[in-house]
Length: 110
Image 1 (cartoon, one colour):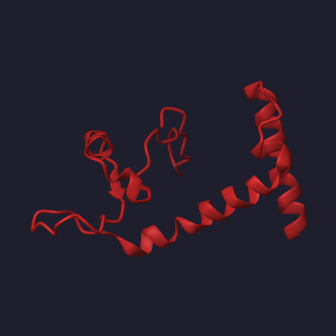
Image 2 (image 1 turned 45 degrees about the vertical axis):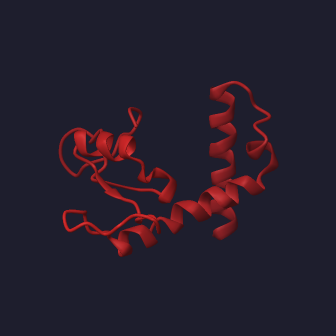
Image 3 (image 1 turned 135 degrees about the horizontal axis):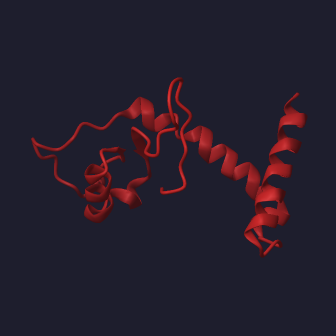
């Protein structure tokens, strides 16, 4: 989370997102406390075994559904064997291969 840089229309980039979507595994108290401490709204569906409390935050289904865009991108990247198995051990080389895979994806879409 410390590496995030969100471009803004004016001024310097934001360092924290407004919302963070995650699956039910991220519903633990530690994650939700960290997010609220940093002013980030958690978009995490409730677990089946959680009881509905009146003070519980509302779940934003529309925002959560937009999470599929990222899930599909990660799924596509896993098809790239070199990235999925992490042949490149140095972070710089791995980032270069990741960028190359994204360029290939854009060219395929065009």
